[in-house]
Amino acid sequence: VLTSVDRDDIPDGGSQHFATTVELIKHQKPEMLVECLVSDFRGDLDAVSKLAMSGMDVYAHNVETVERLQKFVRDPRAGYKQSLSTLEHAKKVNPDIY
Image (cartoon, rainbow, N blue to C red; front, side, top):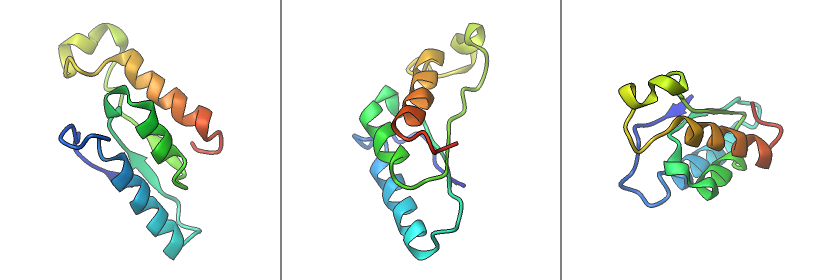
């Protein structure tokens, strides 16, 4: 499992770094299963696509809680629908990921 803190300091949220890491792991050991537990990339679907197409096996993102409690427990820049849209987009661009 690859994971990191939110990388708002990087324009793509760190998606290229994740994608390159996955590609290098798969190059060295293609049979290794790779899961990436990532942020919502501020809703940047290009960043989501980049990672989803990297060869990873599991695309994971913590939604944290139910929609009605979002405003109490999550950073206001994140949102329930934004989180779900990133998960949905990852599966759309790569139907083979879990």
